[in-house]
Structures are given as structure tokens and as C-alpha cells.
Image (cartoon, rainbow, N blue to C red; front, side, top):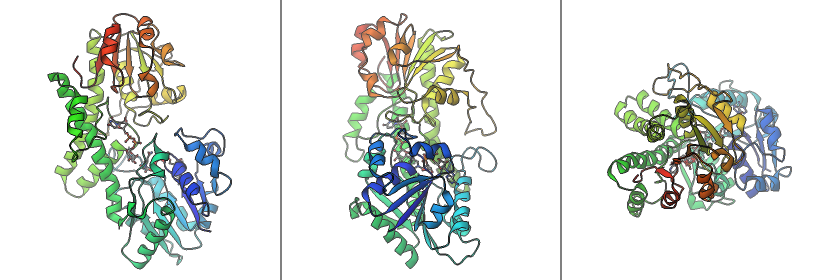
Length: 469
Ligand code: NAD
Ligand code: UGA
């Protein structure tokens, strides 16, 4: 029986390994983590992450061929294939602060693998890492010269949160990069055999190590670039009377452009787009390519611009002040169908409104009050000026409250900001919302989910991204 161990039981490690276990009943999969509460949650009825379809997959295999454990060293030493799916955040201090990937967690995982291994292993980079990381990892793995063969593969993950299980069941492609040596090619075959249990062979792409590592950064950069492009267009639409949804549809029907990922929004969020682009920017700078670096940096700058443009619109529409006005925030997660708030645009929007002394009433169906409180009280790290930390926002009980549903949040509010496209916000009883709000009643739709015409008929003043006022 092949044994797989995955280091890192997070948004990637957990769902990915659960699907491998489901599709490969003859492979034993153990997901390990140093965070005891996370592992306890994976072993409970309340999984640590919300992801549609995940509960069913975990229930089907947990205790059979899928296990979650904090005994990291034991399971790594017993495994044939070790996936490393630890976090690789942006460095906040020292060389490259604000852009470079912080590989501290990766390095400590690699050192531990080297120390505890007693047999040959395939070590798989699942985390998103800078191109050429495998070279450094190889050196760490072989530093104590125990005569053990470590073959390193790059197998970046392309799942999106909220659709992780769907994406893992039916991936557009699986990418495996390895050394062009007999050992490297043999390792690629072993990993390909795992995925071939359910992924058609023609969707398993094999490349050299550096192409696989760079393809992951490139894919995220291209995806984020589309959003910043359409968001830049949304500003021009508002200035000219064009409608960004019509523009997106019109350009998306060109088969060379395609219709996906052209929804204008308050800005992209999530733990990866900004982090991975800044990582790419840093790599370009280190390779003496400032023009290329500046090109990609602009994608993040436009995203920051879109978020502050939204805040400015709210404040200027409401007679240039939101001081002491109640604003309902509908949605805090960075997208629907997840409880993840990492880099969610809601953080910047809420902080912007609090900076103008608004009183916020926040509702999200999946994000807890403690998570929101934590997010709003953290100092904002300025990636463009890494030496500057913005002061923490004032988030006393008086300024921020939490509602158990959307109707409670909007009660007596002067304005409503929709910041996550949860389905339930499309189908609210907007007449009831209007009746319970202060007048004039404003709606600022950061996700273009509401029916603008219908809401204007009810009496709302509606602002949607990239739509005529
Ligand atoms: P995460 O923070 O949810 O999970 C990482 C886990 O690794 C944490 O639970 C942490 O405790 C654990 N960990 C860190 N160091 C460890 C060590 N030495 N030993 C054992 N456990 C350790 O992160 P994530 O969202 O799952 O992302 C992981 C990687 O995958 C990142 O590089 C990210 O860029 C990439 N990625 C993420 C997504 C996504 O949708 N979140 C998608 C594709 C790729
Ligand atoms: C993204 C990529 O889609 C995945 O392929 C990748 O594996 C992952 O990053 C990663 O490396 O972490 P994710 O961030 O989970 O996945 O979610 P997306 O669906 O890409 O959405 C990212 C952000 O862009 C969200 O805030 C979303 O609301 C926003 N978005 C997306 C738009 O504003 N407009 C769109 O048209 C699409």
C-alpha cells in the first residue's frame, strides 16, 4: 500500500488529501499539522473550513484510509510520498518585505523531513512557491547526507475556495513538474499514477520543475489581471454611462477572451492573488526585470484603487459624511461559499468607513464575530511601503456590531454595502429592507447582485459597480 503524508491541514491540504483518499481507496493518506486545534476539528463533526461537499467526502473516508494527526514526524517517516502544503505568506520583515514569499514554514518542514526520514521519499511541493524553490529545498533535504534519496516534484494546486471539491473532482489540469533525470521521471510517473485514478491522462501535464513552479504564479497573475482589467473598465463605465456587465458580456463572447472571470467587483480578495503577484514582482526585480515587475504590480495597485474608490463613493453619495450613520455590511468573506476572510476587500472597506466614523452592523452567514473583530483590529500592512503600518482601526463595541441575519443588520441603517455575493443577498425582501431603513435609503452593491431597476422602483438610491447612476 502506498502511503501519503501531507504536511499542512489547511484549505489546500485538507480538501486535496480528502479527495485523493476518496478516489484511491488503496492509498493511505495522513494529513498532519502542528496546529492541534485544526487537527482536532478535522477529526470532529465541525471541520475547520467551510467548503461545499467537503463534509461528505471526509465522512466517507475518515478512519478508513484518511487520517488527521499531530504526530508529524511519525507519519512523515512512514510515508512514500510527502506533500508539503504549508502556508507561504508574504514576508513582512527583512529582505523583500512586502513582496517576497516567506518560506520559513516550508524550510522547517523540509528540515524535519530530512531529519526523520529513514527511507527514500518523493517530496511534493503543493504550496505555491517562488520559481527555483525546489533547488533550495533539495539542498536542505540532502544537507545531512544520510544516503536517502529525495526526489522533489512541483505539483501546484489550482482549486478555488468555495468550489474546491468540484475543482478537485474535475480539474482543468493537474500539473506535475520534475527533474529531467531517470529519478525525476520515475517520481513523476508515481504521482501521475495517483491522479490517474480519476483524472484523464490527457489532463495531467508534465513539465520541468521550474515551468511547474512558475506556471502557478503565472496562472494566478493572469486571473487577477483579468479582474483588475474589468475593474479598471468599471471606473470608465461609471464616468461615461457604459454598463460594465454589458461590456464584459460583449468582450467575453470573443472566444479568444472567453466569458469567465470578467465580473467587476469591489476588488479581488483571498489569500493568494495579491501574495502571489507580489511574489512574482519580487522575482522579476531580483532577476533585473523592473519593467516586468512594474507591469504586474499595477494589477495589485488597481485592486487597491477599486477598494478605495468604493469607500469614496459611499461617503460622497451620503452627503460627504458617514459620521455616526449606521451602515449595514452584508458579507465579509472574500467570496461566497467560504468562511475565509484572508485579504477580503471587506476589511479595507470597513476600515475606510470606520475611518470616516461610520457605525457598522456586519452580517455574514459563515464568518464569526471573533474572526471579523480580529480582522478589523489587525494593523494593515502596506505592501507598497513596507516600513509603514497603518494604525489599527477603532473597533469598539460602539462602532461595530454583528447581526444574526441581513434584516437585523439593515434595521435603521442609512446605507447598505453588499461586499460578498452570497446567494441569499440576491433574494432578500428588498421592500422589507427599504421599509426598515432610514431615508433616503442607499444601497452600494460591491458585487452587482441586486436588480437595480427593481430597487430603484422601491425607492432606493442604488450604486452598482460600473453601472450608470
Ligand atoms: P493554510 O494556512 O490554510 O494551511 C497551512 C497549514 O500548514 C496550517 O494549518 C499550518 O499550521 C500548517 N503548517 C505550517 N508549518 C507547518 C509545519 N512545519 N509542520 C506542520 N504543519 C505546518 O494555507 P492554505 O490556504 O492551505 O495554503 C497552503 C499553500 O497552498 C499556500 O502556499 C497557498 O499559496 C497555496 N494555495 C492555496 C489555495 C487556497 O485556495 N487557499 C489554492 C491554491 C494554492
Ligand atoms: C484563486 C484561483 O482562482 C485558483 O485557481 C487558485 O488555486 C487560488 O486562487 C490560489 O492559488 O489560492 P480563490 O482565491 O480561492 O482562487 O478564488 P477566486 O474564485 O479566484 O476569487 C478570488 C477573488 O476574485 C474573490 O474575491 C472573487 O470575488 C474575485 N473575483 C473573481 C472577482 O472580483 N471577479 C471575478 O470575475 C472573479
